[in-house]
Amino acid sequence: MNINPTILPLYQRLKLFLTKPLGCGNFLQYSVANNPYRNNDFLFLEKPFQTFTGETINRFSLSSLKDVVDNYASWYRKSGVRENDPVAIYLDDGIGYFIHYLALNNLGAIPVLVNGRMDPDIAADFIRRVGAIGLYSDQKHLDTISGYVKTNESLKFIATDVNNTSVQSSEIELPQWYPYSPTDSHPIMICHSSGTTGKPKPVIFGHQQFFFGKRIRLLNFPASQSDKFLFALPSSHSAGISYFMTVTLLGLPTMVLSDLSGNNAITQAKELKATIVAAFPQTYADMASHSLEKDQLSSVKMWINTGDAAHEAHIRTLVNAGNSKSVFIDGLGASELGMALFNKVSSRQTSLYNRYMGKPRSFVKAVVLDEEGNLLPPYQVGFLGIKSPTITPGYWNDSNRTLKSYKQGYWISGDLAYYDQENKFFHVDRAVDAIKCASGLVNTLPIEELILKNNSAVADCTIIGVPKEKGFDGLVAFIKLKAPGNIIASALITAINKQLVDNKFEPLSFLQIVSNLPVGSTGKVLKRKLREQYQDILICAEHNLEGKGLHDFAYAQQSKVQVRS
Image (cartoon, rainbow, N blue to C red; front, side, top):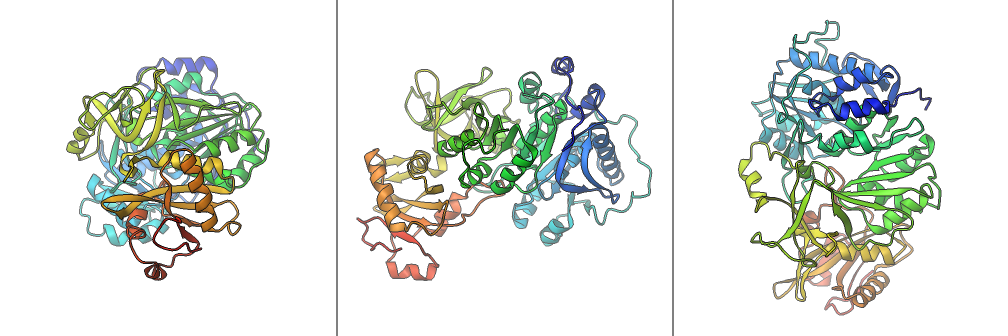
């Protein structure tokens, strides 16, 4: 990657930080106007971007990005898109979501970003519930979703870059007021939640609400001419759009990945000599499973994680593989929170883990509540409640769900947590994933953490609860090995259960070694699907398992069903 100067000068960063109208709906125009290197390329694409005019683009400067965005905005305007119209985008990972996001915001319309990995029937239902007036897709995704959206009368147009030929030879036509000037509360995007607990929810993002964290990054995000950013995030996710904004505002040289696998991220980080990597925990877990050696990725000085909090074993592997002073920025977040609201930084010297997720940022009020909304004291597990200027305005077309998401004025994220006397917060589970065992309520994340920490052959693991006896559940573990075939399930469950009992945890009732698990569109494991699939695994006779196609599994020794591997 041959890079000319692109970084926004420090005095311009301060100027933009102090520019009150600057936000998520208009940052491109400010970036172009204020960066003296606007004509130098800063966005580099793993997968070339094909425009509807037939152009193939491998890299963007601020100026060329604006030109392409204006072309798409013109097409949308000619297609009847107007202010506040929601328009759905359904593509592969890559720069495409960002292009459409910018074009629609320049018209005052609302991009509805639908992850291309979402099943087409679920995606079509989401688009219908949002009330999108149009759908822009690529041909591959249109072929899969067309049968599900053909009865959606709200869609005024369905287009792809292939069949969008009406403006290929036409002049750009934009309104006199272009680009749009949003108000502080204007909705600039609708993204969906991960869907791990049910139907994906349409989360609203506001012009200033969502920009709160980006404004802070103008002051403190590392961006020198020697820095190179590896973008390994789902580009349809709010986190992806957030970091697209950040690198655009800063002019930070960035490689945008379309393949988010761990192996590809390792390869690209080496070739790029990336100094900063941003990804979801799933990519980091995959990277860690490749047995990275010390200093193997020595150019990396910062790992940025968002979404779910990462596991200790994966964090240690990555900071060990990076620069000797590299840090892992772990940000437990959710779309509804607007950004990662807890500050946790890990290095090679870090010893505080145990599901520690950090202290709340200075502008955040975090508490732990019981089911009635009462404040809980230190060390008692309850519902994490948040007050922050970054909280979503709500769910689109669902004011009831929005209101029900609050207790005593705190947004309830659905996470179970506790805090100590120093206001350090610890994340132990999602509320829907906690397991009702005969011994009491069992949280799955500390168990997963212990298994990963104490078994170096395990690449990743997932714990669920399924019916066992007398109205209680038993623990079921799904294990991915770094080197499949070296360990049998019966030996593994015996070793793990000894570790669990020694650490005063509930032991496993069943374990299966797997190569893959059902995941949602953002890569999160769908525990609810596993619970449905394995709901009778602890109560059916062994011979009934033959038809389930199970292999390499074992019951705990005390189980009435004999161990089988």
